[in-house]
Length: 118
Length: 110
Image: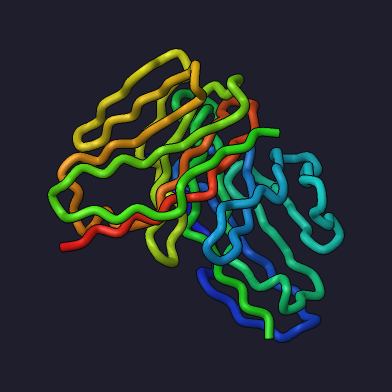
């Protein structure tokens, strides 16, 4: 299957700083990328959907000024958590959907990034 | 929006079959998926079923879809300790948003 990578896999930062998480589709072009947040022992919550070259669509209750999403190319999307606070600590997972074939209907998930804000 | 419900926990003995159940509210999902998440890792797609199918078998995995009852199940035959993980069902696909269930933690007892 198609491979999606995330970087970094784990990050610890101080309160008030900004953190950037990268999501890359390694062997296919992803027209759409999704960002999810997972709280401990809970399911995934969709934060936003980004299409290459256009603004991200945020889910209700997700602050677009706090969680900046950029999808500048068909293989890279970034999520920047601005002015991070301890309540932003979570597991962030991205997924990517391709252009044709099975990948059109399948989301390929990255391994996730564990963010801890002190 | 779609609600997808799963039981939280399932414990089985190694070698037995596991059945993980899922109910959903939105019958317009094009695809229904099963994902596996191991501790600290991302999600791995195990299998999926198109909404006009009743059953799909893939090696040790069998997916059953009851559209009338809006019920989806995943059966794992000959469950192994390596199958211990959290299993998520999800519905959506294509241009539809994928909605995930609450996850079922499968514990396999040696």
